[in-house]
Image (cartoon, rainbow, N blue to C red):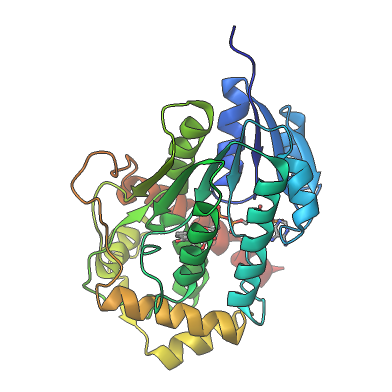
Length: 310
Ligand SMILES: NC(=O)c1ccc[n+]([C@@H]2O[C@H](COP(=O)([O-])OP(=O)(O)OC[C@H]3O[C@@H](n4cnc5c(N)ncnc54)[C@H](OP(=O)(O)O)[C@@H]3O)[C@@H](O)[C@H]2O)c1
């Protein structure tokens, strides 16, 4: 007789974790949804999840939340305002590995990143490489490492700049085609892996979206959807990008790592190892996702209009 699995989901109010928790609940699994804000977790609680709040760097909190679970979904939730972002990534990674060992949970699906095969000079991604190694050292678990490309969702954060300046801007080179993926597609793969027992040992899965896109193309597609067909992409210098990130409230330490990551993108050092296999391709096209960005852009415009006229 099949028993109902208990699955713990870290970051259950975030891009991937929220969708994973919803999918697991729909499948009939018992879900422990972790976050730091009870209010933000209340929708999952109403949908049947057991919610727990605590700090992701607290190994004791995590070990309790992982205990007697059949599988866990882990991620580094690192706050981009942390002054020493890399040190915080390392602390969270250690807490997760410690909790996995202490709790005895047998199966782990860990969110990593494309480029996590590289040990250094990839900025933010280097911390995920270290986290992969830490988890791989735990002999008692079956481990699935998910290595998604850049999320489509990152462009939500660019919309206010689009509204203010009329351009899409970043330090990535305009014409480099790179894989990008929808967070919901990552969630679909993670949820399936958490429920099914069709993998064992250490497995790695890249998640790449249906096709590679340059930032110039992203601007063209987004521009059409928001009624600004002349929207262009502007590549910022490293110094301009760092200033923009710090101006938006992120730490100087995070900005340095972001710049190092985009340099690695621009030098084409972060690339798929699994290219061309249908396993790595995910279904949602940016053209379809752009509708969600357009909705958020319209909401931003109407809020600003409301503020201006009141
Ligand atoms: N964005 C990309 O393009 C990309 C690509 C590859 C890999 N990644 C990796 O993806 C990971 C982030 O995953 P995501 O986008 O699904 O998550 P996310 O949207 O960034 O959300 C983070 C989650 O963790 C929670 N959280 C944050 N700080 C916490 C703390 N101190 N204690 C407890 N919970 C905390 C957040 O709660 P609140 O809702 O309360 O904030 C939220 O549920 C990162 O490790 C990143 O490097 C990202």
